[in-house]
Amino acid sequence: MEFNIAVLGGDGIGPEVTEQGVRALEAVGRAFGHTFNLSYGDIGGISIDKHGIPLTDETRALLDSDDAVLFGAVGGPKWDSPDAKVRPEMGLLDMRAHMGVFANIRPVKVYPWLAESSVFKPEVIDGVDMVVVRELTGGLYYAEPRGRHETPNGIVAEDTMRYTEGEIERVLRVGFELARGRRKKLASVDKANVLECSRLWRAVATRLGEEYSDVELEHVLVDACAMQLIQKPTSYDVIVAENTFGDILSDEASMLAASMGLLPSASVAGVPVSGQRSGGLYEPIHGTAPDIAGKGIANPTGSILSVALLVRYSLGLTEEGAAIERAVDKVLESNVRTADLVTAGNAHVSTIEMGDLIVAAIESGN
Ligand code: IPM
Ligand code: MN
Image 1 (cartoon, rainbow, N blue to C red):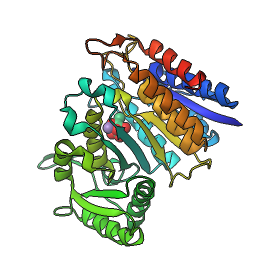
Image 2 (cartoon, rainbow, N blue to C red):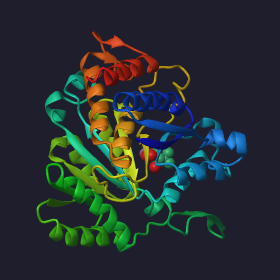
Image 3 (cartoon, protein in one colour):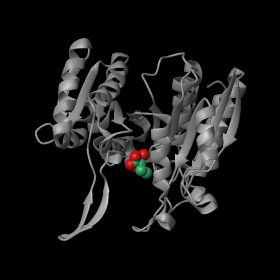
Image 4 (tube, rainbow, N blue to C red):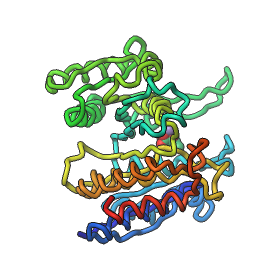
């Protein structure tokens, strides 16, 4: 089959890791007989430098026309002035809103052979396998009013948290559907003891819980969830949270997996249906890591595993997604490590060498 994929590397280590993601995509194309037509575009700081804005109409057109988007990361100290009129992150937020990808799926899995690289005790993280579903196009990130104003009492800054019932229901539905295909447990995260948005969130979760009576629903306050993620992470299967809570909890959860560099994400506009095609945005959960950009030492695994999610959720290629994940398993199991994970007794490889090994494992049919 033939597919059109938009590739937006962005800033910092974004382009380096995305390049390895693209190589994994092409390897799976050769192994399974698919053609991927790639169109490259600018986003974030590089787009500000070249065009003055973080997301141009030209890049927007790619988002509209292609089957899926593979994205790297945006941002960096160069564009970070607090008074900046345009910011790289605005490009990412605009892209998410433009694509309507309201559910951000972040799987966190602990590889047994990486236990020695983790800051956690092996018995705490052994068997961790969870998915954080983060609401991505609402809440504090988008709702109005927002901004900074001069007042007689000094400067005031405001952001607004607002959610409609419909926005809450559609993202929780993604969580419930994912839970059905897994261990059938859903933790709905809120701050219902304080926030009105959270009380509506809890009411919607309770109503859906009756419809999905085969899924065990638990309501967890966000602060308690932050604690339990570290104390007993194996108790979680699917976690669903609003935008800001999900942003924070998913970074926290990523530490269970030893390195953020390993973790992929999928942002979708509906419940992914196995074997069906539907657009989506795929990116590693890490940022631009300006301190190591251009050194060739970043871990490309998060981007490569994002490609696995891309082919599975957006292109309907289930087998191909599994083949990429098996290749990553095989390479990590063979004790090969990028700088973020290396410990004594491992083979230390660069970004490109890690890509080479995973590509070879995909091509050999592992
Ligand atoms: C993420 C990032 C972004 C976010 C930033 C870069 C705007 O932290 O994808 O989690 O907060 O959503
Ligand atoms: Mn984040």
